[in-house]
Image 1 (cartoon, helix red, strand yellow):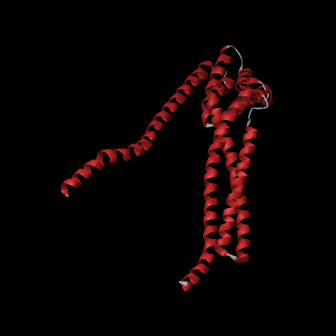
Image 2 (cartoon, rainbow, N blue to C red; image 1 turned 30 degrees about the horizontal axis):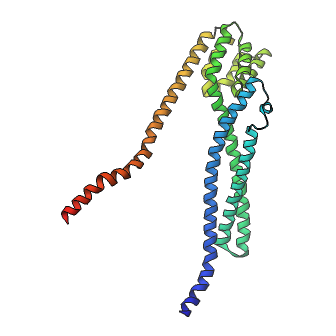
Image 3 (cartoon, rainbow, N blue to C red; image 1 turned 135 degrees about the vertical axis):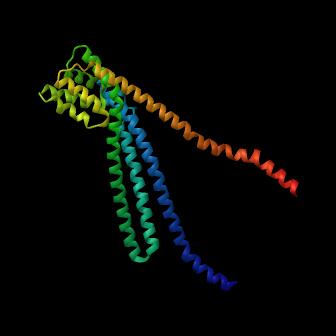
Length: 286
């Protein structure tokens, strides 16, 4: 017994720190993955909601700070997300360092672990900054696309009232706000300064959602063709497209819901419907 105990204790003291280190590193990596996923989802929701609030305030002509001190603005939530990202980067760097120290050991393990922790932190920070830039650009494009039907209807109303393309773009851009409103105001400024209509409205044609709108406004500016009917038809078509897309998403959600519901009802069906039949057959055979 003493010999067995003497042989087990040294091995236990040898493998216990390694096991704990490996488990700690695995926990750090798992926590990093979970926090990254949650942060990405929260950042997307906050960007959509707060971006709409910011554009709405800008469209009404009020400053964001005039709503009160207790209101949360995109800057505050962005700082909170940055703090969470720093925690995630620290956890990931610590996990990489622990893995390197555990696998290599000794002074070389500590050196490699420090380098691995530093490299992991730099890589996570670079990836976060890249995703933040891409996400902001995508959110801006989605917001502009969502504002296009309303902007087209307002443009048609202004053109029907006798306003020129530059006056209509300036009025609609100031009232709509947001990324599309800023582009309309910029287009009105360029037209007022004497820029060609083809080059001004060609910037909208570079986006997939603005090709038809740019074609209508360019035709009105270059050839003098009235754009009221064309812009009105475009606004109605955009409304119909958004309605069809919403119906498609609703039907897709209804189809996707059947999977979890099936997983929930399947055990009950097996326990209440199939299991009694199998037990009855087994009892009759025995």
